[in-house]
Amino acid sequence: MLALHTMPAAFSQSECDAIIRRISDVPTDEALLVGRNRDHNLRKSQLVWTDEVEGTEWVMERLIDLVRTANRAHFEFDLTEFAESPQVAIYKASDSGHFVWHSDIGSGAAAGKRKLTLVLQLSDADSYEGGDLEVMPGAHTLTANRTQGCVSIFPSFTLHQVTPVTSGTRYSMTVWAHGPAFR
Image 1: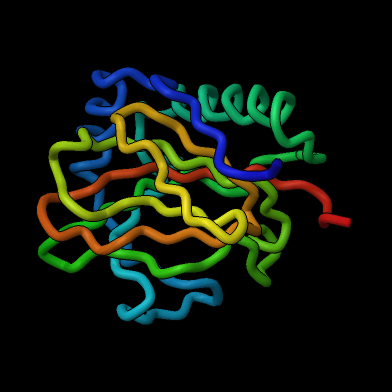
Image 2: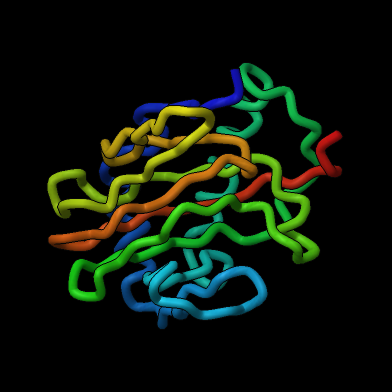
């Protein structure tokens, strides 16, 4: 079944903390919707694209290996590239950080070819409240594992959301694997 695939301990706690430290001194961008639209009722977070952060090159190599392993074992999608940089999303309780139900396939050149979504939990689960990644592959909602370093992978057409962060700050990294259109 095409659902939520979990890879516990894909990154260590120290690796996640190092990624957060690296992006902490980099200016953030306001997260926008597909088409560069802004609607804080739908999405409120800050983003850092890791291709702009020195010292994070190793992260993409690991993400590629994780996607390759998960795809072979669970999805068997025709994947051809990673056309977008990984992004770190920062959801702050002070901003009511959230992202309502959506899918990751959009109308843009790269977004239209997204096939798998990978989300890496960078934050310690006890450092924030709310902020659950929920995935709806069918009639039931699944909640992703909040353990720091855990990776969740699901088809990019799957509806998912990040519930409002009510305390603290949630850091996560997302990358998409791309390929020819689904048939």
